[in-house]
Length: 117
Image 1 (cartoon, rainbow, N blue to C red):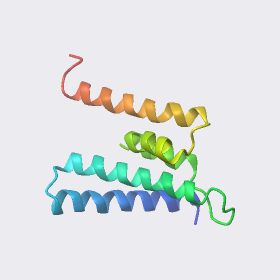
Image 2: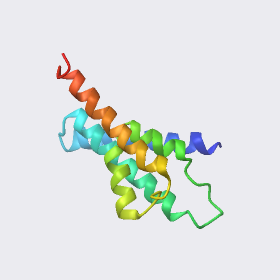
Image 3: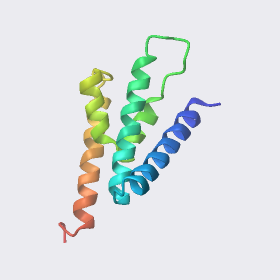
Image 4: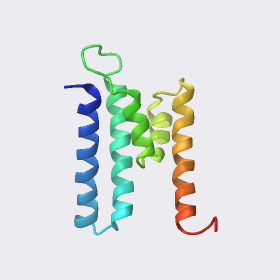
């Protein structure tokens, strides 16, 4: 199976499962359950990629997937994983894309709630 499809499906499945657990089990509102879940999945994917980085036998998580998780709602986890795991800190795009994703989410929030009208 293609690495993009494999890791994308695992990420989506994790986000859906954790969103359901947080929403139904812990009674957290759906949007907050999703944000918590996608950040948990994003952090886990960064951790997993870091853990297999020197292995050479396992397929690394494509950078596109890690960036997509940032834009899907996980910029907080992307930034936290870079700091705590010291992973993907040398590449400029890994410093900029989570910040752009965070700015995108903040801008969307502000626009949605009428701060730009």
